[in-house]
Each structure stands twice: as structure tokens, then as C-alpha cells.
Length: 91
Image (cartoon, rainbow, N blue to C red; front, side, top):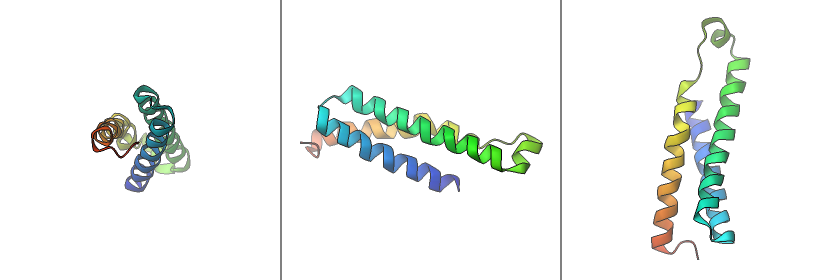
């Protein structure tokens, strides 16, 4: 389940950040949007999984992978934005 959530967050944040980069030509706005989208999706998913999982409530288990993945996915998005700048994908 975590892999699906991570993949969804990565795909959505990449698409939105590239669209914002195309529209505004501002690298900082696109990076900030990628970080905010990742944070919102992964924090919400962690919260929902914690609320719905009885085992997590009983033993205090939290999906730590989702929280740790926020900066990792954000850095991957930053690298994609830099590569897209050099490859002229964003015109």
C-alpha cells in the first residue's frame, strides 16, 4: 500500500511542478509546489492509515516510510526539474 501512495505522490507532484514551471517559468514556485503537494499527500495518507488501522493504534505503529519519503521524493522532483531545464522538455 505504501508503494502505491508513494508512486501516486511522486507522479502528481512531478506533473504539477512541471506544469507550474511551464506556466510561470519560476523554478522556485515549481519546487515549492512539488514539496507542498508531497507533504500534503503523504501526511494525509499517514494520518488516514493511522486512524483506520487498529493495530497501529494499539501498538503505536506509524507508517514512517511515508513521512521519511517526503524529502526524498522532493529531491527527486528537484532533479527532474533541473534535467528538464537542460533537455528543453519545458519550453
